[in-house]
Length: 262
Ligand SMILES: [Fe+2]
Image (tube, rainbow, N blue to C red; front, top):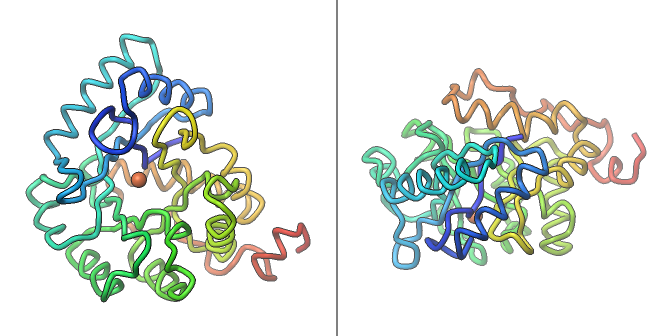
């Protein structure tokens, strides 16, 4: 599997706090079947002042430590990019890294307040030639009043990333509900761990994958952790990547699949 959203680089945001923790996270990931991981620290002006060259250097250092310790995990560069003005310029100049240098990048909206003109801002990024992968919509407290916006964006050029742990209840009942609903309605492109540590928010995808399989079917679930992440890493144009299901995988509502009936 490929995990494209982690805070495994030590000491540069609110994720891993030490090299030892980063190594422990990597061992957890490998044990779960993850072979490639994107290092995606926050870029949040005024709070986490990371940039492309700094993230690349930190990635290289951690990769060397993984190799020295015989941990079979390949790291690539990315960032968890907070939605602020100037993203397109940052992507073009390299101060903001996309995922492995591709046209795809992680876009993190604010958690507790809907950004003004959110859909317009996301579509401007699409029209600039990028594919914003909107991180963890299921955990945003404002999704409740804005669900149709995410449906629209997922159909018009943005991608949605659901957190694997949300599907197993790590982030509480609302996040589980919205995560399951988004997957059940065929709107989710990728699953990722958004791991922050080796204790609570850990780099594990398999348990969330099992929930996704139940909601969307085994093939579609595999696409979320393998096929589409691989397409991102190889910068495959979106038109050539497996599209979202044309309609929900079960003929009934998403909650019916939760109950096990068809
Ligand atoms: Fe994150």
